[in-house]
Length: 259
Image (cartoon, rainbow, N blue to C red; front, side):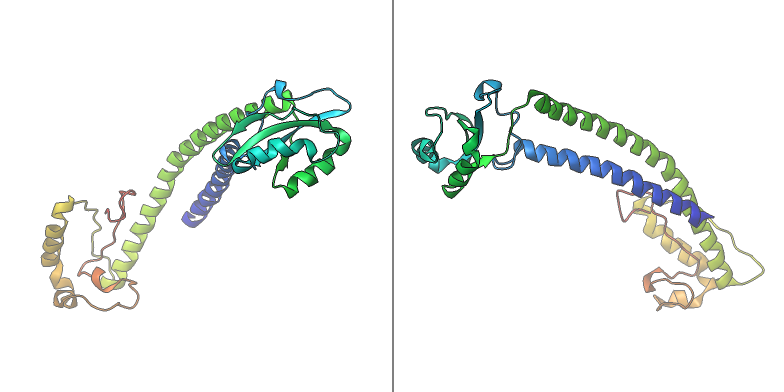
């Protein structure tokens, strides 16, 4: 029953965590596109409507990423890369540490030829079509994802709080069962032992251990001699065997050494 209960909690935790982590990953991916290199980042926030020739049947404005060291070469050569490039239409609209983003207007019929010629000069034409609705939709989607992330995190934290107590109770029940079984195996029947829960201060832990060893040393003379090798059936390391049955319970989950 305990195993089934913990299995259900573990399964639901994986499902909830997966959904939250996927959303978190999508937001991080969006942020990289907003802040990365001009070769890969989203360009919607960098340009304005005035940078483009819109609504023309014959003309189109392209966005070209140019290495900083090649700004002069671009300005001197873009009009000659192919026919039908509108002279004087290239403007620098944004730059980062390595590249600049330039506009250029030309006839639609020569776009593919222009892209190929630009590529040979290490000028990268980005696939971008100015659309105010699409740009605003992207911004709205970013806000929506952030709100959904906060909502899912709040639900996940609430679920963790509720189910942690259930899992911890089940874990303590398992500890109690193991304590009983190990005690029967060691001391035999009829049952004549008492389980106790001790929580000493850290500075008092060693003194408590010494006191318990003195108090119960008569129960097992082998423990008084010193550490023993693993005892069949107990699954304990040499340093964990005492004349009494002992199990550690970690209650400070921020400290792996906590008891």
